[in-house]
Length: 300
Image (tube, rainbow, N blue to C red; front, side, top):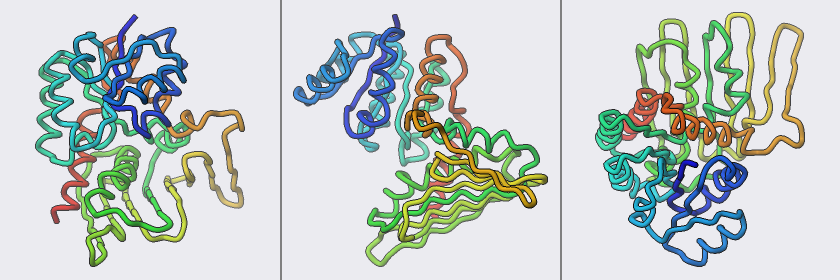
């Protein structure tokens, strides 16, 4: 049975990852790792995990095939490099890093050692976003993220929130990028108000908007194709439009949130790739592009 490490047991790990992993213990041997002994014991008992470690060195000594990294962004680059140099596949929460050269060098290192470095862009795996991706002959894509009231510094907001909308929009494109543009609007004290990004392909136009002061919490992605229009709202409803016809589809009540939001499908896809030596479920080139867009928005 493959050993899979989980490094960092904070909010995102507890909400989005441990529940999925707990149900897969008949397939993989999970190793929880955190310096906090109380948290380590509590979560192991809560989910029935039997292997825990106090630090990264202990985890590496257990020789896992892969490690999920859920530590603060500033620690990602050093941890990922250490894991890759020990021939361990890596899954990491977005962003891989905020320094674009570090992102590129880590992906280069993973490729050189024939290892996976997978960035947690879960929205690519949300079932309704997958249906948007499948639409043929796209012409306009509009991806929008709205917060009721902001508060995050510009760089934090771009790499914490806007990167998801940017990545979703780029994922939905079916042709190579030709032109890009964008701008950041900030408050006087350096907090993000709005972020705008646009891109063009031969036949498609992409518009991405992140509005941190919008009076509502909303995530909405619309695709206009040549014969139809479809919209996904908050990842849990799909509305399809044709002339004089509108159809809204929602998940059955019992569908788990982590399935709707794409976390569970992405976790399964990564673990399958590790087990079978399959392709990276989040294409490295596209992941680097999403990081590059965000970096360039901040640099302009």
